[in-house]
Length: 226
Length: 298
Image (cartoon, rainbow over the protein chains, first blue to last red):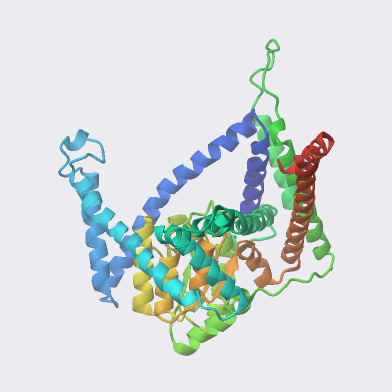
């Protein structure tokens, strides 16, 4: 019974959501439109679960002086300070009655002055990682790798002003060999075709996985069977 | 499963009956139809696909076997775990950045279950940092079940599956920190990823970890292909659970999926031919015929 109830819930919910997509009115359609709201409400309560787990894990590491406990200390200080500042609206110009995110509040300063630069720093790492990954990946070891290398060079040059400078002298009859035009053609045709093929496969995979879950064929996500 | 479906249908009809028709007893008024006819073609496709997949599932249940091609990334899962055990280093599993409402995350949880069973048998260490609390709960239940079924309940450590942060780059920074400090021998990135995919993969590469990735987000696939040892491309992520479990009904659903792909290929070829003919001849009859023939995919 412990396994059957979640399976029944899964089946009913799945059927309601599938049928609700095609039904334009009535209780089925209302449920279909409401389910996303229900999920959003549940995830709000899940924040408490996540926050509680965060505190428990890091406090335990600090208490046991486990490996790298100092990083847990930094996490707890950041978590506690942000929580207290936000919850009690400390430093907010409007005081207790102010909005949670007040333009000149301490919480806004934490977000604008600490969180945003840190997030931007992590994002900026991508530029260097793209360079290192490209350097490693684009080697002409095989036929396919050589094609990849040539295509990457064309697009790299074609997307920068140097591409136009290198092939801008070509006559109009040979304009298709202009690097920016070649780059656009590669992105518009072979790349789009490949992406669409992958997306068709993904869509079918999603359908098959969803049906396996709705009909109870796949049950790993349910956990223990006691 | 049949009993459960029947009971569910009864409950569904019963629930429907609880909502009385508000217009009963009033004069007739104009209203929209119950069924959205603009989505009729999608409805037909859903029915056909569902029927095909369920037919193959039933065929597999009756004992029919199907050939499934090898997926390199999945063949090396056990090798990756064995490598981690020999080196005495942990295994990192990142189930993606989305919540349990994303089918990729569900597929990732299914894979985690299979992987956790192998890890339990090899007596290796597993770390699963997650971005969403619901994913943490699901992952803990899944891993615990796997350790139980492997006969190693004592080896299960609840704290190895923990919540990090809901913020994308805060989560990425934390996982990067785990990779650099713990130096896992194997990293699995299976689920839904965004811009952080290359950051994670390159960091894992910098510590010499064997990396197996899989996502159904096409823009992230090239980054994983470039930086990881093995990549599950799109549908392979969804096929992975069936592939690893070798359960006949799940393998049957893979064949049903393949039939869907075959149908798509046929219609793509027909569509290309018809549109080429239409462009070449400008014939109105060809144009009308192609419109009818391709109505299913409009």
